[in-house]
Image: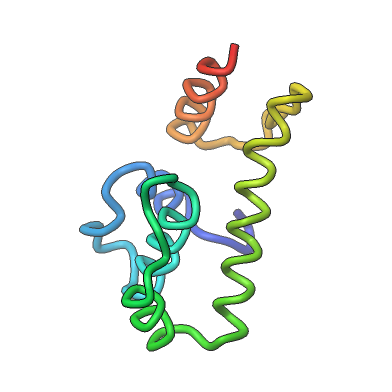
Length: 106
């Protein structure tokens, strides 16, 4: 997390990021985009996309969507081959959530 979000922000994502004052409106939109791309019953609607375009350039939206899609790919691909985090995630809350999610695949 040397060049990324603070540990406090990463742990806060596991809670209700929509109401958390740690996140800017732009960050909240990026997190909502991730949710909409990740959860089956959610969609990136035209209305949401118009709202996102007020805060992000086209290039930023492409980059965000690509990163989110890559992480979604990894989350489906890696468990098939037993690829785990190998202790790279040092945050206790994230580690616990990761372990709980991995347990569902066993």
